[in-house]
Image 1 (cartoon, helix red, strand yellow):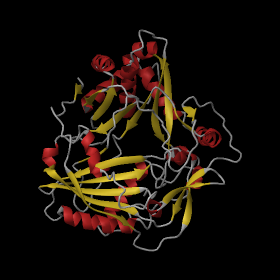
Image 2 (cartoon, rainbow, N blue to C red):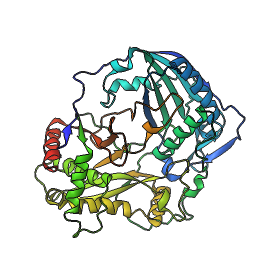
Image 3 (spheres, rainbow, N blue to C red):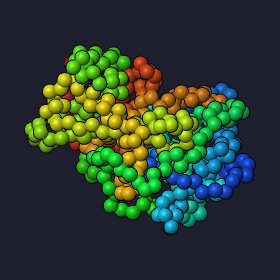
Amino acid sequence: MGSIYQGPPSLLQDLKVTVHKSSLVFPSQETEKRTLFLSNIDQVLNFDVETIHFFSSHKDFSPKIVANKLKNTLAKILVPYDFFAGRLKLNSETSRLEIDCNAAGAGFVVASSEYTLDEIGDLVYPNPAFAQLVCKTSNFLKPGDQPLCIFQLTSFKGGGFAMGLSVNHTTLDGLSFKLFLNNLAALGHNKPLAVTLSHDRLLLASRSPPHVTFPHPELVQLKIPINKDSNPPAFVATQEDLAFNIFRLTSDNINSLKEKAKAASGVHPNARITGFNVVTAHIWQCKALSCDTGINMDRMSTILYAVDIRPRLSPPLPPSYAGNAVLTAYATATCKELNEGPFARLVEMVSEGARRMTDEYARSVIDWGALYKGFPHGEFLVSSWWRLGFDEVEYPWGRPRYSCPVVYHRKDIILLFPDIKEGGGNNSGVNVLVALPGNEMEKFQSLFQKFLA
């Protein structure tokens, strides 16, 4: 039976972080001055993604040594990743965002906390105070200057430390960010890049003229113009009070869901029974039926989730593509269908959402973006960090104890995180992070157990 994660009884509200040094780091070699094209997928992702990577103490790498080595390694990696040292700019002729690869530098901050890493508490349980481990200050920058990548190395008493990164999402998606971390680790080991980058973002340029060949109910047109300072609201944060829980699905729970789907798979042969698909279908049931909308079983519910289009295009994108190559798939069903099942049909709907993402469908989405400047639109989004493998990166000072994004509670985004003990392997469990109004959370919790039985 799945369980509610037993988080700490109280969370540290203040990690007592002191910033000691802030600076810009420049490429270690001269780089070509160029303008980097941003695809229509990149265009609407002008916001920062913050991740934290926690490390235990290492006898050969004190936090001071790590800070020096990381700063030197950052200078080296800014040569192949020259766009990380650039700045966003708006092309006045095309009204499109571009990256000016001008070697203006990436940010680097050295800080310390008055606590030990163990005193910070349970790393799985998202503590709003973790935001202190990512750079929030700009007092070391010129007015109006905004690096696309900022590192913060925060040491804890006793030798542990955290590497916090703030990265503008126009630069990379989760998969290419993992490649960046692998390359950062390789250079830290004084080795060549683990993966040679594919920089050609014109591979995802819209067609001329744009040709939208499918309806796209998963997208909604933006009502604001895109500019270099805008942060398009994919999901608008509500002001209501939200209860927060972590629901843990063990590998046994996930296998049980797979068996439940297989029981009716003969009737629904297109159900691709994977860990992600069964977990997503299970969450969909719980979230849609927990909404405080009365008993309207004819209400339509639309779930959104990301699909990597690299292998789905013709020809496929290089796996080393550096940029955003993820689009939003969707599935829609009535609450009655979600309540009555069969479960295999719900898994089939989730599978169909991903299967729909062919080369032509992806090109149609990209062309739609050229015409309408749109963003994903649905009841809620499942954002999976489950198997990105950030905690598998082997730095000179070892693998992270845990890696996670900085979490801001949102009722319309449900996050999937790897289990700290099992990791994010193919047979691992998963933590499901849910934020809902109190009455909806009670329903969600009851449904979560009911549909697992």
